[in-house]
Image: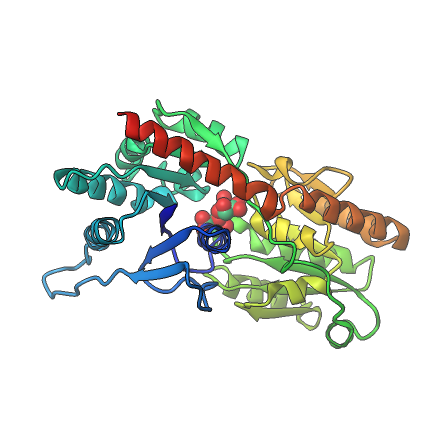
Amino acid sequence: MKIGIVCYPTFGGSGVVATELGKALADNGHQVHFITYSRPARLDFFSENLFYHEVAVSNYPLFEYAPYEVALSSKMVDVVRFEKLDILHVHYAIPHASAAFMAKQILATFGINIPVVTTLHGTDITLVGRDVTYKPVVTFSINQSDGVTAVSEDLKKATYNHFDIVKDIRVIPNFIDLQRFRLTPKDHFKKAIAPMGERILVHTSNFRKVKRTKDVVLIFKKIIEKIPAKLLMVGDGPERVHCEQLCRDLGICEHIRFLGKQDAVEEILSVSDLFMMPSESESFGLAALEAMACKVPVISSNTGGLPELNVNGQTGFMSNVGDIEDMANNAIYILENDNRLHQFKENALNRAKQFDLSLILPHYVNYYAEIIEASARV
Ligand code: GMT
C-alpha cells in the first residue's frame, strides 16, 4: 500500500504513535509518505520506503495567523496525486481531519477518490475539540472521514458522548516496540542518580496542565518522608517552572532532577523503579506503556483509558484524580518491599507485551484494506 501519514511532528504522543506506525509499515514493505511541517522527531534515518514532505506556510505580512490548514490541504493534494497514494491516515483531529476533507474534495475534481482515516488521540476530543471554537468542524470532519479509530474504548465512548457522531469508531490501542523499550543495564547511571541505592521514581510528559505535574512533586514529597528516593522529571512544557518553584518551596530540590526533553527515554526508564502519571485526563497513556515495557510499574489516576492499561494491584495502582495521599501510599506499598517491587516489575512487562507492535500493526493494515475496499464500492 502507499500510505500518507499526517501528524504533529513534535514529542507529543500522537506524533510518536504516527511516526512509529509509519516506520513499522515501511519495515513491512508499505510505502509511507509523512506530510508534516517539520521532520518527525523519531524519523531520523534513511529507509527506501519512507518519504517526508514538508508543509511550508507562507508568512505573507497580511496574515496575522498563517493559514497552515490551507497549506496542509494543498500538500496532501499534491502528494496523493503525484505519489499515487492509496489512503491518507491523519492523526489528531485538529486540524488534520478537516484539512483532509478539503483535500479529498479537491482530489475528487481530478477524478481521484482518496479514502481518509482519522485517528483520535485524546485531547483533540477530551479537551481542545470540545471547545466551541472547534466543535462544529471536528464533528463534521470526523463524520466525513471514511474510517475513524480511537486509541481506547474510553476515548471512543467520550467521542460519542460529546459529539454528534454517526460513524463507527474502531478502537486500536497504542502499541510499543519492545526491541527499543526494554530494560537495559545502566548501573553507572543508576549509581550517579541514586548513590545510596535510593529508589528512583520517574515522570515523563509535555508538562501541560492536564498532566498534573505538580501532583507528581507532592506525591514524591510524601514518599521521601518514608522511603529514601530520587525523582527524575523528563520533558518540558508550561508547567515545568511551576514544578521547579514547588520543589524550592518544599525544600526538596536536592532529590529531584529536571532532565528536560530526552530522546533516549528508554535509558532513563531502565534505571527507574516507579512511573507516575497522575493526569487529569489520559486517553491511553503511551508514556506509561513505555515505562511498563522497561519493567517499571505505574502509579496513575484512574481517568480515561488508563484502566485499560494499568491493572490495579498488579502492574501498579490507580487512584482518583488529585488523590495525592492514596497515590503516595500505593507508591510506598510497592517500593518498601524488594520482593513486592520485583513482582510488580514482572507484571508490568507482561502487561506491556500485550501491546507489542507486532500484535497491533495488523489491526491498522487490515483496517486500511477494509476502508480502501469500502470506499472503492461507493
Ligand atoms: O499526552 C499528550 O498530551 C500528548 C497527546 C498527543 O495527542 O500528542 O497524547 C495523547 O495521545 C497519546 C497517543 O495516542 C495517548 O497515549 C495519550 O494518552 C494522549 N494524551 C491525553 O489524552 C492527555
